[in-house]
Image 1 (cartoon, rainbow, N blue to C red):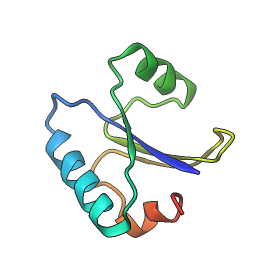
Image 2: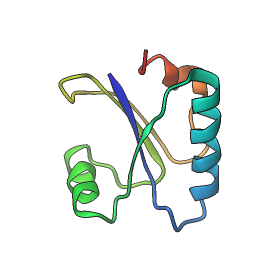
Image 3: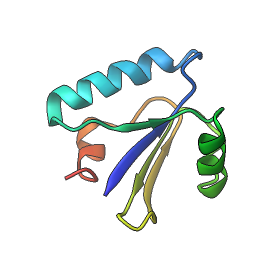
Image 4: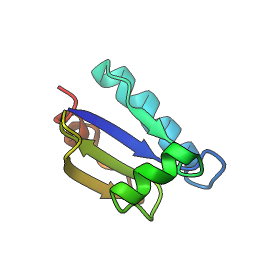
Length: 86
């Protein structure tokens, strides 16, 4: 499984996401993938999973089936997300 965070780097929520990514890596030793919704690949990803609010955390199975989604702030707890990266 993998977890992806979709967020805009130049936004009000960017600092919260960057802090979350740093804390997540420090506590779990896993690096989460990030996607910018303003890139071509990011737009496709957002269309595929119906993402319209940022930041959005998406947990995907190995065959890209969505397992869980958390939209907006506050971000989910690290323990909630870590379940999907082990």
